[in-house]
Length: 499
Image (tube, rainbow, N blue to C red; front, side, top):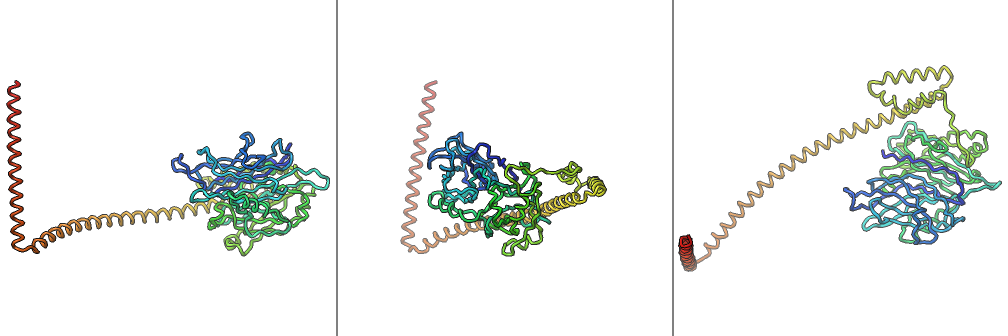
C-alpha cells in the first residue's frame, strides 16, 4: 500500500488575521507527458492568493503539496494552512489553485475560488473537473475559512480523534475517512460538489450549495489499522470549530474505500459507520480539567454495500475535545519502551521465523511484570495490537499465496497460448503452400482453356506469329553478338597499338 500518512500542520494562528485550511486529497486522470519514458506525470498542487481574478499570483506567495512521482492518479492526502497576505486583513480576493507536472513548465489546470463565498468554519468540499482533449482531469479538495476568535462568549475548540480501532481488521478495505457533522445532519455519501472549472456559474453553485445550516468536517485518509502520527495532539486528525457548535447535535461517521466505486477512485466514499450524537459527551470532556478521551462505539448501516463485510468488525473511535491552543499530553507506562519495542515489530516480525521462541519469552516476561504490578489493562492493549499485527501479516501472507496461485495459472495460460500460436503458424504455412499450388493450377488451367477455345485456323495463325517473332528476335540477337565481337576486336587492336 502506498504511504499516505502526512503530518498535520500546527494549529496556532500566530499573526494571521484569517487563513484557509486546504485539504489536498487526490486527483484522477492527470494527462500524460512527452518527457518521461512511460509518459506518467509527477503531479502536485500550488496554492496562492490574488486580489483579482485572472491575476497571476506572486511566486513568493506560493505554497505547494508534495510531488507524487509517476502517477496519473496521485494521492496527496495533505493538509495545508494558507495565511492571509499582508495586504488583506479581511477575507477577500481569490484563492488560486494550480495543478502542475514537475516535468512540464505549463500549468495543467488553474482555479480562482472567490474567498467571499466561504463562510467561517463551514468546510467546502469540491470535485474540480476539467476536460483535457478526450479525457477529464479531476481534483478532490476541501477548503475551510478560519478566523481567530477571542470573545468572552465564544472560543475555539479542537475535536481530536486520537484513534480509530477495527477489531478484527476488515478484509474488504484498508483505508477509511472520518466525517463529523453538526445539527444532526446524516450524510448518505461524501459531500464533494462537482464543478466544471470552465464555467464560473458551476463553481459558484458548487460552493454556495454547501453553505447550509449544518457543517461537514472530513478527515484526511486514514490507513487501517492506523499509524501513530507525530503532531501536537499525537492524534490521527482534529477538527477546529467554535465552541458554540458543541450545543448542536454532533455525530461522527466512518467511510471506507470501495474498490468497485470508480467515481471517487482512491477516496473512501462508502459511508458504513455512524456514532450516536455525542455533543454532550464532548462538552463534558471540554469542561473537564484533564480532557481525557472517551471511547465511542460505531454502528453500521445496513444500506451500505459493504455492510456484510464490515458487520463482523467492531469499530470504536477514541475522541477528546480540548480548548484551542491546548495540547493533549500522553502519559507513558513505565514499561513504555518495552511495549514500543514490541509494537514497532522489531522482534515481532522476526517471530514469524526461527526467533519465535525468543519473542514468546519476551512477551511472557513482560506479561509477568505487568501482572505483578496490576498493569493488566496495558497488557490487554498491547496484546490486542500485537494480534492486529499478526492478523495483518496473515492477511498479507494469504494475499501472497493467492498471487502465487494466480501467477501459476497465468504461466499455464501463457504456455497454452504459445502452443496455440505455434499450431496456428503451422496451419498458416500449410494454407499458404496450398494457395500457391492452387494459383499455379488455376494459371495453367486458364492457358489450357484459352487454347481449347481457339479454332484450327486461329491456332495456326498464332503459331506462325510466334515463330516469326521468335525468328526476328533471334536475328536481332545474332546482330548484337556480331557487333559485340567487332567492338571487342577493335579494343584489342587499340591496346596492342598503344603498347
